[in-house]
Length: 515
Image (cartoon, rainbow, N blue to C red; front, side, top):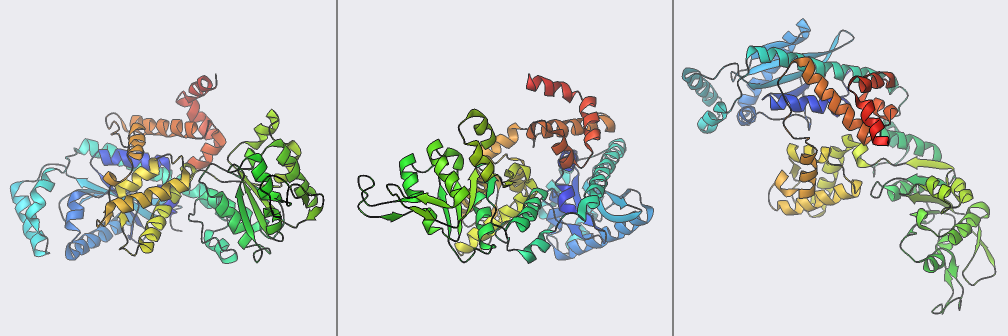
């Protein structure tokens, strides 16, 4: 069985450990069981390697060497330290699961001592024979970090710890894999092509949609602004038996109370000043179809009473009318407010809340499905470039890293706008770099110290514990101290997480936060 690379490399503990590795001067690369490289946003390039591998013959030589080392690593089932054709120190660690080697993590980009003049001369001669222009090589070789054998040994232990975390998470998700519908399977049954992403929260939503779409149950969509509530409502409608009838969406916060009532239910001629003709309301226009009531939490108590009547009996009166009108409409409601708390405060009708709450779907914010960010970013980038009929651009690895660590308060809509904006600013450049993205993204990410150099001194145990403590602390804050949710994200049991919280004194922080 192959490693679930996308999920495993997206773990915060994996990203933190890679960050430590990069700051030691190592560059991390990943390979599957047959030594094919896994391209990942968490892989960083060595300036020397990227310089040399631009030439096909030189890259071919490197690839052959990697395959050779992978065979040696697979046979020994232990980390292997070797010199690559360029003379850099490389460390390859096997990923062993149930006695099978399912992949490799390789770190390179350092030397155990500075290059001597003769070695540089020989290297240039060899690379020149492969077609590499060695004019800019000297400066790159000078900048290569020197790592002592003692530090290399500590680093090897750190990399082995990373692999252990990967294996642990792999086993956790494999255990549940048979119970999770795959994205491809669901796509075969329903058209979810307009939703981009394969994260566990999204797959869970797909599973719910598959069950509720054929029914006429009322659906309540909960989520922050920009999470795609209208998109989900459209998917429900256009995959349901009502797909040939109207789909209508109305934002309840966009009108005053009187205007909204007229929009929803229509009005009779002379019902109010300016009502010179009879007008059908949106409920009549949606008859036989689906009606999305967006921002339903912003409706008045009086309007809530009328909405309840439609939900219960399928009837209403136009403004100024005396005749009941019957409609057959599936209602989907959406809000970014906590309706349950509004019920407790008396600002939202309890009976309406329970009528709307037949099926409840929570749409997670983008910061809780970060593994979808690269997919979404590239989708929006390709879509925008295609629409403008310009060559497809690329987001640099650094930009993706900033995107992954930004909180995205505007969610998917904000990401879409950011990609569009940076694409326009790129002009004729093919690569979108850090200087083109919004300053608020850069400032927030750097303030959080995601890109700040961590300490690399101390014992292996202290380094790993410091990383683990940071990951757990950040996770608790992000999940509002919900340990069950964080344990699922980290791929460990809740009991294990509680022990770690106590070990690092984070329980005290939690109590202080609540007090």
